Image: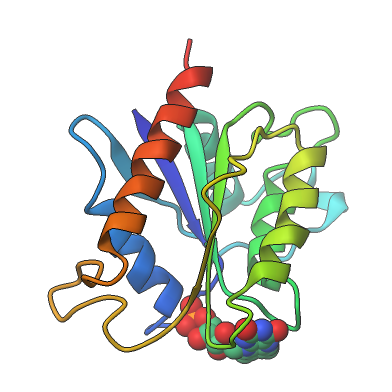
Length: 180
Ligand code: FNR
């Protein structure tokens, strides 16, 4: 099983990336988490629909090859990040040829604030609905970044380990339900 992971922060020391990499270590045997690159994508421009840049073609091929998609994003101004929206838009066009369609998805948010990205997740959920992506409802995973959430070795810290393992196992079972 191939899970595409799209991280909505492109900064070097991103907490979301660190947490996503720790989550990937909890994947069961035979499940690969494939991190998609989005930092080199051009801005979405409808004029390019018939002539995509190589980076956009790469993204589309990777999404197409995925059995499911895990979005891990910070909250920016009570929504998810612009770079993530750009990546979603890029692989959603031309009209009727969205690569996301039908891919089971889940959302994780890691943010610095006490609301932990819950509003970002809700905005993203609206967008995944129009793309016809069946999105895991429970467990919800909104995390406030704290020291120890990811330990020195890059593993999920002890306080959140069981929750994270349950999330990964539930998501993998969710993706399996849609795999033909
Ligand atoms: C933020 N941050 C933030 N946090 C939050 O909980 N709710 C919010 O609405 C916002 N808004 C916001 C806007 C902008 C432009 C930035 C740069 C930051 C803080 C954010 O959670 C924090 O910077 C995280 O560290 C971002 O995630 P990464 O880059 O560490 O993965």
